[in-house]
Amino acid sequence: DTEVTQTPKHLVMGMTNKKSLKCEQHMGHRAMYWYKQKAKKPPELMFVYSYEKLSINESVPSRFSPECPNSSLLNLHLHALQPEDSALYLCASSQSGSYNEQFFGPGTRLTVL
Amino acid sequence: RKEVEQDPGPFNVPEGATVAFNCTYSNSASQSFFWYRQDCRKEPKLLMSVYSSGNEDGRFTAQLNRASQYISLLIRDSKLSDSATYLCVVYSSASKIIFGSGTRLSIRP
Image 1 (tube, chains in turn cyan, purple):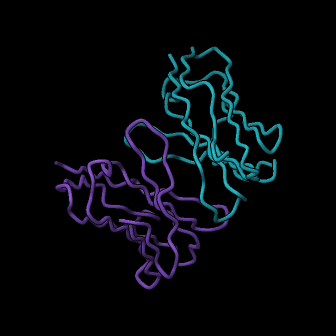
Image 2 (tube, chains in turn green, purple; image 1 turned 120 degrees about the vertical axis):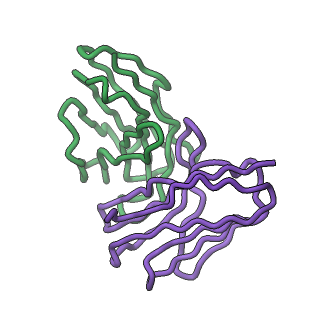
């Protein structure tokens, strides 16, 4: 299994809602990543988990809260988002957290109303 | 100056042509380099890792020039299906991953 899966594929939420994005991989990778991508822009790194510990937080607002329950799962909890947070949220994994190629999931397309 | 720079294109070339892109990086200590392709509204997919000795995968050749601090991607005998955005990725350090802004390629029949 060489796949990273993400759910849901699409999400529409209001600014007062709480929702979660989920990501799963079964490649035995020990690093997992969240990225945000706006249209016609490259992905922007948000968080990195390495061996289930948060190793990088790229100054992301606290309305985004990551969680890594185990080495295969990564969640992104969303609360009180703003319309400008609407984007494609991509999860990726790599063998370890340093210098390895990353494999991306299909993403969750988020719209904040 | 950006840490990683790519020509945004678009490159518009006929089917069968050879096309090449470069990606320059500013940190001479950068260690790992990759090319990804991204189709419209899809996720980035790994195309190739880039090694110091250069590497080839079918019609695709990737090279690293450490002296001039750039990586390149050459596509030979281009196909319509090669139309995509090509992203270079540089590990500036163990914990710093930088995506280039992407080069758009369009192959015309």
